Image (cartoon, rainbow, N blue to C red):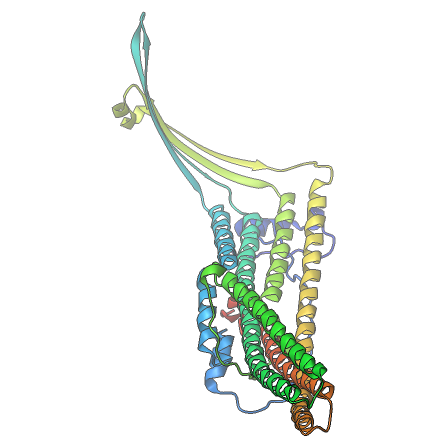
Length: 480
């Protein structure tokens, strides 16, 4: 559909339209939507908290990122398999896919308005009574009607719905990314919990040895009874922490089951080794973020749809033209309908124009412009929020990397202090209270290190989500 005239974006009334423009529009359908929906959004050239490259990025990892398969940045087959099940069974994704199908069906309905409508009807009747002869009648008719889209009302509505379809596709991509990221977050937390459970298993075994040593020393009268109580209490506290962690792990497992569309009762993720590896995430330039964030892309398409609705509202100022034709026949029998004398035909043209509406059309145009302005504001807000989230995660990754280094050094020192306190206690140089304090400090430091490692993984995952997961708007990749 060609555009023969573009309306100004400010207040506009049909009285300003030249006669020549109206004549041109009679020859080809117009688009009365504003030419420009909004001014370009300024974006920075680089991220404020961009991380320095730590090494080479493999070509396979780069291709996986471009294809939206960000999870391949982690070499974890179990995670890969779970994410594949999300795509197949997650119910939220199925609902979002159904919304896309619904939007596509509405688009086909809008496009159907551009074509003529054809109809056919045939009937055969018999009538009679006790005192009257039986009468027969038959009829056959063909009808055709068409309303040319002179002012682009239908064309603008089609373009608006096409933008809505693209927005629904972006919403589907966003729902997919949210579900995948939620599963990966829960999976990393579960693996970190497994690591803490393994650590507590080692700690509890050490506490049991300490409790036996303390009991033996008490039996020979070397230490007081309170030392055995302290050793037993330390052991019991560690065992209670293990039970609590097992409950936490079950909660993460249930969350994963929900995301892959299964009942928790029949779902399990077995324990496996875990490393706190954090992959390099390619933080591309901010301008690409506007095409790679599904929510930002959806908001931009909403602006386009609202802009086309302005054209739909403006088309109400102009008259509507409709063409109709019919061909029919009547007779006593169906066989009579094909004879020339029984054929009836008609051709018609109708032109309708609203003369006075009390300002209703003006109000509709103003409403459409205000809706477009609101969509622009939402788009700009979503873009700014996206850039803020990327900066937040880049900053969090840098801070967590520094914290992890300090926490690792603190954990090593705490383990050395714990061992020294235990040796001094066995030599009779210190009380068991100091041993308990050193053990608690060492356990806390080692668990804090594990928790920081999973926080780094989750921050990298949040950065991937903030960058759109490598997804790119399909309509942005198509040739102009």
